[in-house]
Image 1 (spheres, rainbow, N blue to C red):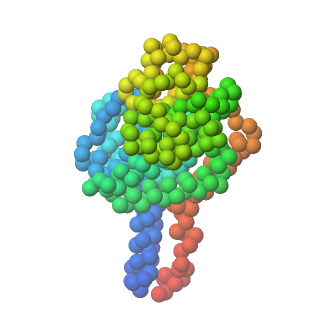
Image 2: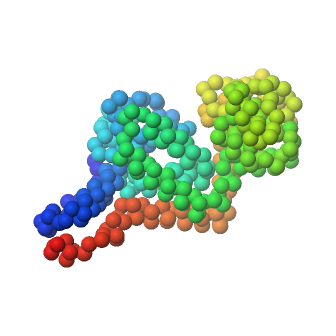
Image 3: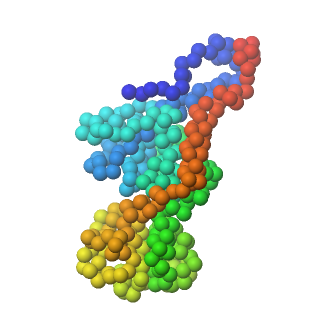
Length: 341
């Protein structure tokens, strides 16, 4: 099943194993790190795949991240193969699986938003970090897998800073702002939620004077209102007083149903939450924007931004090559030194 990207069976002169201790330590680290990357595997379950929890012994060996667009398992050695066998035995076929360098490239593209429906979006990096922070708290935390995850996040940040900052305006919060501008909405705006997406939206709408927040958690609501120096609105009350509502809450329940939207006329409602908490037959023509509508809006990239995205893809391949093969380029001893040490 696995196709190796690096040949770790390269024969070394027998003298290499009798080098001074410092050189032996370097060689061990050199090949151990190469082997670590070579066994890297990323498994992606597509959206809509029926939920299935892995056995405890497998979950203890794999890093997992779940979003509305994917469910990722990342691991090393034989454990991803065992997870694949488990999933296939239970009818989870057609999985997207990446090995070695392909896995590292794929994961960098995920972290930088280049695999997202909204190309170049920034939210996925935060989701990845949140999942990793949670993973580190587990008793089964695998420090070797952790090293790779941390390098992925550092490399992803470098790619975003160098090539994709200009794409940042196409984040979900940025697109919500564009919808408001398109509809000439500048006051009586309510942001529903107090999480990271609500904070991003509040930052982008900072120049709007008449901006309010509402949330279930009173402590977090007071905190976000203090941060932006805005007023708080009791949870889901007085909604008819606003010209625009931007929902950032995702939940397995309906917060805004048909009855609400029957009274929501000639105003703007933007739903950024996943899973969606709205239920209505109304659409863009009625002032109701779903995440899919914003994705379509955000895909209208001009030629300059497409060039930046191409550069980001190229940089990802170069960084991956550096991670996997960089040790060869920085090998501190010549073969003569190794043979005659």
